[in-house]
Length: 390
Ligand SMILES: Cc1cc2nc3c(=O)[nH]c(=O)nc-3n(C[C@H](O)[C@H](O)[C@H](O)COP(=O)(O)OP(=O)(O)OC[C@H]3O[C@@H](n4cnc5c(N)ncnc54)[C@H](O)[C@@H]3O)c2cc1C
Image (tube, rainbow, N blue to C red; front, side, top):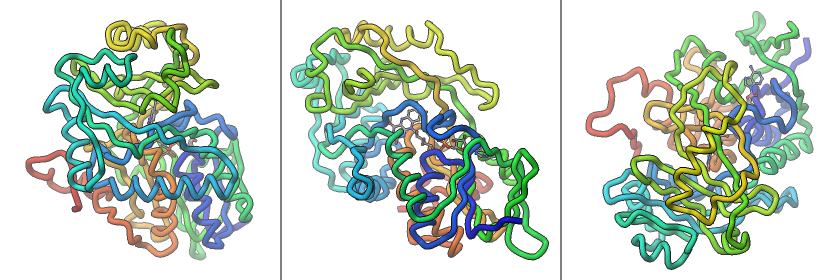
């Protein structure tokens, strides 16, 4: 039986980062991915993401976001790849809306320099926006857009350069303790491989690899769209427009400045259709696009040009919208992660480190109590859906 120090199952955002982190520690790594290289049929498809520091979902994640920002820049230098463009970030909605409240709380708690803008000021600075009159938004400078296809590939390239073996089109169906110690991993061809350490980073499919833990994950079909703007594309490019998240009429929309290769991205945060990831309808329907156009017609008419791209992608949600990152309670050397809930990409370098820490040492210096799987089996925290380890 072939053996490795560490096997990583799933080579999306977090598996590719974990493979790189383990390879950096001198581990002999095997990465196993069920689909083809770059196919990204889980949560890491669709080319672009936002990176935000004044994180509205969970203010306690700000230090993770700050460290990740630095680490992406290091990865850019290391691989000679352009991954991140600073654009600034605008987050808001009506007074009292969770996006606005969370962004203000993050900024205040972590002393993040920011401005607070009303609807008129938002329109004055970026005429493409016609926000509802009651819109208020936080603007921070340190936010931007990422090319995640390149980012995944950069982590994979680092792992390979340091000796990792990566295998695509290989679906893991089981893992178990080996009779003589260590672990065994079995793929869908019946091939069994040995390892001391195992990272399960299977995104929307991770629950099936730890069925004993009954993780309360729900997979949601999303349909990000890219449009050819009707205004001058340069006026809504990365030099001019921030990444943005705005709640309007009870729905939260977000967007990423115009990328000449892709278009101007506008989408809905949480489309609301829960699916089996093996059964999901990957065809973009007219109705999907119409949901975004209905917003554009009123709030961003200059974005409402021809559809440039649209792609079905999957959120894997936890009940509190934080992540699940933990070691397996009954299997030393095994850790798993679902770091999504629609906002996990930016954290990949740090998630990769945490996973490498957990499998090689059983612990990590990062404060991960808010990520532990055990939080779902205890009593619900009173007064708040957000676990906050401080
Ligand atoms: C539309 C959309 C917009 C988003 N926007 C943002 C954003 O702006 N900012 C942000 O920070 N985050 C954002 N996110 C979230 C972010 O993309 C995810 O947090 C991240 O991609 C999750 O990566 P992952 O590695 O956990 O999962 P995945 O990318 O799904 O990777 C898991 C991999 O495991 C493989 N796999 C599964 N089962 C097996 C098996 N049995 N054997 C082998 N391989 C297996 C899968 O094929 C897959 O490649 C967004 C997500 C979506 C869908």
